[in-house]
Image 1 (cartoon, rainbow, N blue to C red):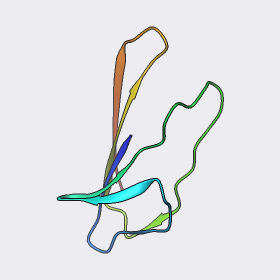
Image 2 (cartoon, rainbow, N blue to C red; image 1 turned 30 degrees about the vertical axis):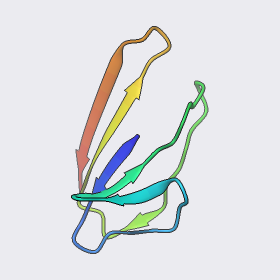
Image 3 (cartoon, rainbow, N blue to C red; image 1 turned 45 degrees about the vertical axis):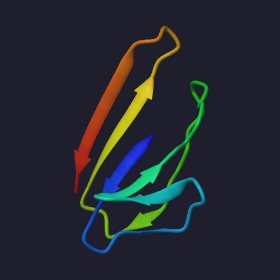
Length: 64
């Protein structure tokens, strides 16, 4: 899942829904090396949370 934050955040994607601090996008299972793309405007920062096949968790944060 991806948490997106921004002052004028806009996204046209059914996988994303409002949450108190911005948008939450649930991307489901993405087999490697497949990719998922979300087109957004007004982006300021994001956090991606995922689980690997072996069960370990990973978290990636970014800012614009």
